[in-house]
Length: 133
Image 1 (spheres, one colour):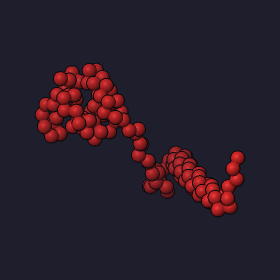
Image 2 (cartoon, helix red, strand yellow):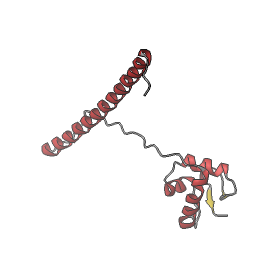
Image 3 (cartoon, helix red, strand yellow):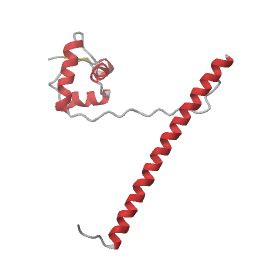
Image 4 (cartoon, helix red, strand yellow):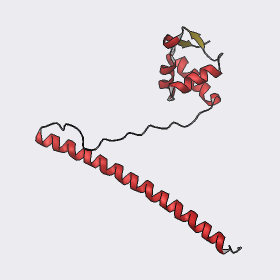
């Protein structure tokens, strides 16, 4: 095992300090979110006991947007074709396809633009419906 020089050890310790600080921030944010949820739950319980509705919650819960995993066109194509085969007898728009596949409608529109022969297009604008070719 090679020994590290003093400057390398200092750099390594500084990186560890930075990592620990980041971890502490994440943990603190999680505790804060849990505390906010607890406050909202207590306000609901208080409103039930008193029979009065709370005007506004003391703490507004910030909902985080769910992040979907990225998916390639090759992986998306069988999912789209399966959804179209099951539910697309009368055609589906991009939003409906996205709901069936579990992806964002913009991702479905991008897939359709990149693969113009995958689906047959009928209509234009918001009323565009897609069918199996």
